[in-house]
Length: 384
Ligand SMILES: [Zn+2]
Image (cartoon, rainbow, N blue to C red; front, side):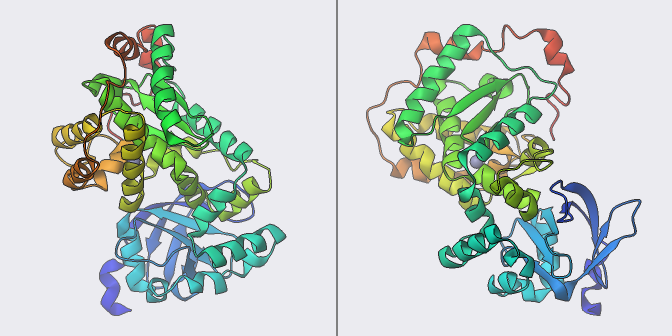
C-alpha cells in the first residue's frame, strides 16, 4: 500500500446513509492506510476497510462519482461526487474496478427484503445500473412527490414568477414541445426568480428555469432548446436516477415501498449538486434534437445558446453551478460534438418557438414579482 501513500489523507465531501434511517447526511471522508474513514463529529470516525467495499458500478476511468457499500454495515451507503475520489479509490481498492458482479455478491443486505429481491433480479436480468432500475420502478406518485419536494426546496427563499401573460406564453411553449415528445405524462415547467443562468430537470417531469436563463437567451428558440434538453433528461429519468444514487439505496427502497419519511429531506440540495455523465448529456441532446424537429422549432437556437454560454463562461460550466446546465457544459468540453449533432439532424421547415408578443411576455414573467422577494433569495447571482 505504501506506493499509494500520495493518495492518503485527501478529504472529500460525501453523503452518508447509515441504512437504518432513510435520511442521508453530509460527511467528510478521508482515504487512509486502513480504509475509507468517515468523519462525522461528534462520533468516532468510522473505518470501512478497502477489502470489504463494493460499488454500485465498477469504477472506470470515466466514473464521475462513486456509490460505495460496505459488507459489514448492511444497507449503509456512501455517495461521493466527482472523479477525484473514484480514481483514488480505484487505486486503493482495485477489486472495485473489475466487475459489477462483485456488487451483487458483496451486498447480502440487498437480498434481505422481498422488494429488494425482486429489484435484484431485475438488475441482474436487465444488466442495468441499479440506480436506473430502481428509478424506473418508482411509482408515478413517488416521482411526483420527489419532484414537488425538489422544486420546493430549490425555490426556497425565491419567488415563483407568475406574471399572467408570461405564464400563458410559457404554457404554449411547453405544450408545443411536450406534444412532440409523444409521452403521455404532462411536463410542468416553472420559472423561479433567480439570477443564475440555469435550468434543472427534476423528478416527475418537472423542469425549473431561472430568470437569469430567460435574460441570457437571445430568442425563444434558445429557450426551447434548453427546455427540450431538460425534457430529455426527464424522459430518461436522469433526475430520479441521480437522486437514487445520491440518497442511497435504503432511502430509495423506502420510496419504492410507498413511504417517503425522511428520505426527501435534502432533495433540492442534492439535485443542485448533481452533475450528469457525458453519456447522459448526450442522451438528453438526442432527445432535444428529436423534440425540436417534431415540434418544427429550429435546433439552431439550441446550439447557439450553449456555444455562447461556454464562450462567455471561459471555463466550461464555470459560473453556471454544478447542476443543470452547469453540469451539462462541464461534461461537454467540446461544444463541437453538439453542433455536429445539430448539423447531422439536417434542415427542416421551422417557425419561431414563440411569436414576438409571446416571447416578450415570457421574458417579463418575473416582472410582477416583488423586488422584496428578489432580495430575500439566498445566493442569487452567486456562482455555486
Ligand atoms: Zn443536461
